[in-house]
Image (cartoon, rainbow, N blue to C red; front, side, top):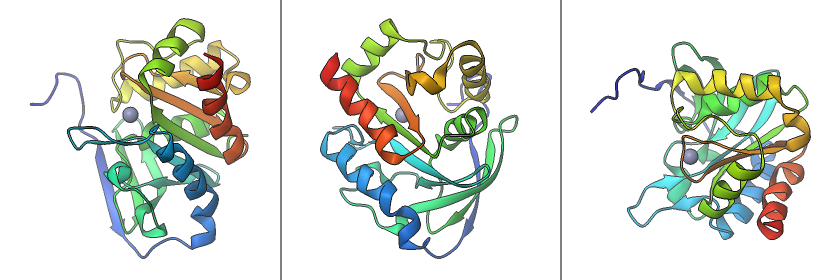
Length: 199
Ligand SMILES: [Zn+2]
């Protein structure tokens, strides 16, 4: 059933061959580490969670494909290139062998707000999420993921806080949902692992 006020995510998918391996290599290395830590993967009900991306140029980015969370290893054919998007219409265009993740617009909002950011990781972890909610600025709990309001909420968060310094935040309305980002894949990934140790 469609929730009131929620516009369905619309992916204009242009089916193309896999991206060059070197463009996804670093991203995929970190994907393996995060999968190993169960920060992305699959729930007991078989639902894949977590997604990762890297900026290619300007506001285009490579992101893991929809439904790939359940796969143990990803190959270049499991990634897609987001070439354009509209926050207002909750829509995007992606080129590749798979559909882009339904959380792609959240990644897009971060690339727009933070020009220095080259990598964005979205992971799920209940304990980390609960603690980040208490400790650091987060997106509002009334805003669910996949809504047109989420991008606006991320813009607000970047405007009101020094998010580039923070490098990580919890999505208040998306249980377990945590986003990290950085100038390198190691920066985006390590902050998650460090916070897990620290908390
Ligand atoms: Zn999520």
